[in-house]
Amino acid sequence: MIASMPARLELIRGHVLAPDPTRRQIVRWPDALIRVDERGRVRDLSPATSACEVPETWPGAVILPGFVDCHLHFPQTRITGSASGPLLPWLERSVFPEEARFAEAAHAAAVAGEFCDALLAQGTTSAGIFSSSHPVAADALLTALDHRGLRAVTGVTLMDRQAPPEVLLDVDPALAALDRLRARWHGHDDGRLRISVIPRFAISCTPELLRRAGAFAERHGLLVQTHISENLDEIRLTAELYPQSRDYLGVYEDHGLAGPRAILGHAIHLEEDAWARVAADDMAVAHCPDSNFFLGSGCMPLRAALDRGVRVGLGTDVGAGRTFSLRRVAAAAYDAALIRGAAVAPEELLWLATRGGARVLGPADRVGCIAPGFDADLVAIDLPPRSGAAAPTLEALIDAVLFRHDAGPVRATVVRGRPLWQR
Ligand SMILES: [Zn+2]
Image (cartoon, rainbow, N blue to C red; front, top):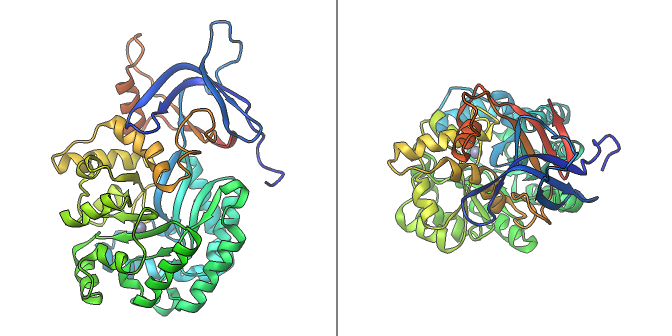
């Protein structure tokens, strides 16, 4: 922990919205006290009494667990909003030329700072992050995350074919770099930073790279982050490159990359049979609807995935996603579910943006709840002015947090009791 880190808040008072640990529900505490211990964990959450003299910490705000962004790309920060989709031409025209710049440590370090600031300004406290294929960029990102105090899971993005040479890395140096990053960063600061295994997607990886990535993840018990079934052209090319596998998910299964440590980005066009395997093997899905709209990829069947018991988190998927705000992504998820004719309630979406994401990225016993023993990772959000004297219902509060894009900015972002960002 560096010396310039803000001091811990020991006592926080305010209007708390606390997700249930397992059910997709939010419990409201209109006036609560959160006590934080010396390690940054919640000691207790209790109603404030009328005799309580502690002032409200952020008057007019509601306090939630920090947002958990389950899928985004650090080296795409500066190309966010590049309208050159759909997926494969967008990668070629917008993404690969920018990612090539991350061979330069100075460029990577500059963007890493912007990236961390953008996460904190939107109330995100934990993120599952794709870097570029360059080890120097992943190291610059981890250094910035360490200094800013954010929680993250990241690593080099593995790719050894089907892209310009500047963004590729051969199997041996890639695995060696991954192992160095693991030794240096995995579990850093009591598990705040972790290393994951990130094959970009099946297209960009040779069978040998996938197989060795799967073995590496298995040997070290690491999470696997990747993409699946985002776009119809991508699915066709994957089937051509991996004709032996039964389907797209089968490619990952055949190379040791499936199972409960896998986080699958998108999963828009999976067949019923693949969804059944995702559920049976307890794989997680990162749902990125803003990105899916921008690249015209389609709408993931969120309602059906939840009803199957699949662990789902939300992802901005910056830079195909146009925002670092997981609240806007939750709003897009609401729209996408309606378009598919199977609604998902705003309360469930707010739960997915916090607790649901924590059950995907982990550690599930430390993140995503405001309860004793959990890390005090919090966001305070200003409530917009409202009409009438009656206290707003829980539903009205959640609607204001998720859907009033022009009101209710983030007031403070807190990790382990430390206010890393305040307005
Ligand atoms: Zn992505």
